[in-house]
Length: 511
Image (cartoon, rainbow, N blue to C red; front, side, top):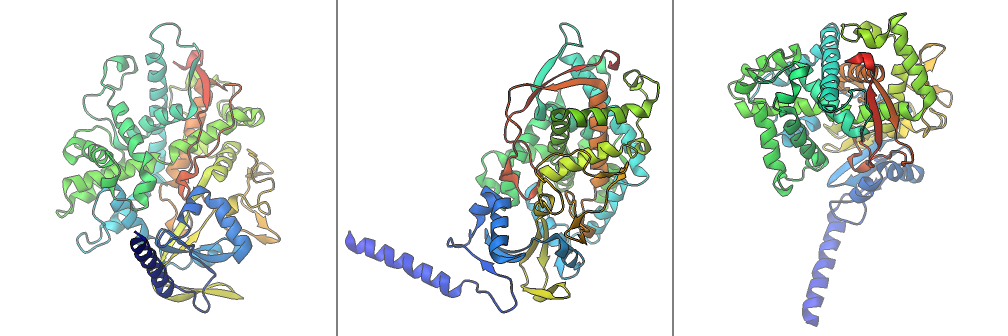
């Protein structure tokens, strides 16, 4: 027995010694290197537990730039926002698309598009996102406005078969945001599947296909961080089967029968049709990926925006008065059936936009990632540079900027008018006496910013306008403040970690 123990101990010691001898060492000119004592994992557990506190502590110990081993990847973090421009402008030597293409294809189940099998496909897909901004956003705005009203109206009718539609209803705030935004966004982008009825009063008799789709989406989204982390889908229980169901929902033959798809989705269908090498289920997987991109972060963003407004009487009053000011002497509830809240009107709501930006500042825990294409020295400013290696990741961590007290006084506090200055949108923020160019980054930065950000912000504005005008709403008393589920840190807007319940009722003239 003793001999076996000695053999095992010697074997482990030898393995650790080999790892120490052949593991990475810091070269001259490179940033401080933090590897941890666990091979491959490195500091992955500390990062996952509380990425913000972990990185803040490393910044105090090692300065604004350092390299950390996290789950087999060496990641160089640039923590000072004044150094961000040096990273963002390096489009050639620091590439985003390599990482995003690999991560998306693995997560959603379609082949990587930046290969010789699909020449030009990646560029065509990127150009299609122009149909979520500019002039094309006008028609999307009107469609979304109608769908939001439809979903809320059918919701109240279906939940009040007995009694008055004006009775109070109690529900989880996140569940409410999820249910409303999931269906309204789907209808706006993809159109209406066959055999469904858009008549509000026929709602009870139609199959709730959207409920089954949303349920599968929720299950998939729960393991999304593990898929992004490259955990094989076969190790994640029923996730592979659930993903297959979601993909098959978007089969091209099925989508061909859907009515009134958006110009954006129709353009993507036309693009995919040009590639014989792209199988039907590959095309379907691309459409499923867009579904996640359109609601995966928007739903939690809606929650935080509405939660903060309901938690702050002053913010609620100012924002609602601003919205009602669009109607002049009219009663807003009585004219909601018209196509009134246009994109141009939404852009005039300065305090609403500020309240949204403030909620995003507090709830966004994203990372801006670039893959190093070759060994080179990254010049951060005229006085300093750091050397990085091919295959490593350079990461910006915007939460450190969003919570920087030099940029945002009392950074943990919600201030709905933080992005307003003398009645106009505030766009100048300073760290010390230096202007910060990238002060608000929930959608990324530079050329790699989320291409659907204009559509997403528009959706948030519409959701808040419609709910504030159509409903009376109150948070239930005696419950804890909402906290963030930080297990999804690095992936966008954090969902709440605890249940927040509220009560609401439709206003008399809204149905």
